Length: 155
Image 1 (cartoon, rainbow, N blue to C red):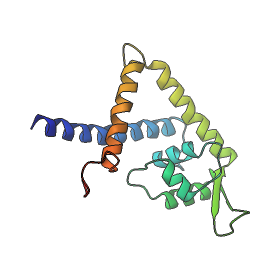
Image 2 (image 1 turned 90 degrees about the vertical axis):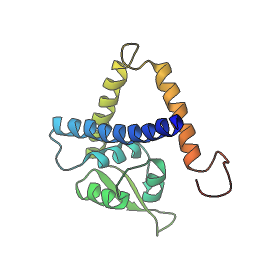
Image 3 (image 1 turned 30 degrees about the vertical axis):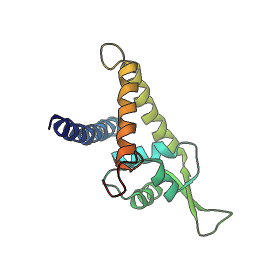
Image 4 (image 1 turned 180 degrees about the horizontal axis):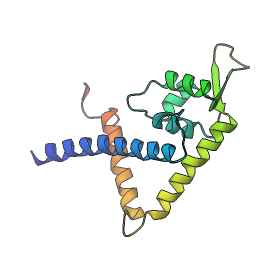
């Protein structure tokens, strides 16, 4: 039963880390006086980067826990962070890209990530440990998505 306890602890830690990360992003937004965007929207915006994407492509790019990507995109368009345009090739498809205001916020989030990575190291989280953790998390992701080939039925 030790495996079950370890497995459940891993699930709990993943969930808790995600919430803590969103709190870190919220603190950064607060520090810059940005009250018209929330932490999840800032993470979505960060993932748009320099691309022009549909909402479906954006959804596939990241996992936004408890979030409705369409709603968040609409709010970011309303608040001037994203520009929304119909695709020239498929008029049914709507694409989004960062506005100047969105680029400014993405740069703020990127600078936050730069500060975080500069502080990682032997006294906090060595890069080898981070790589090992990522390997394990990717294996869990494959396991949960059914990619590990365990049985024919649902997990």
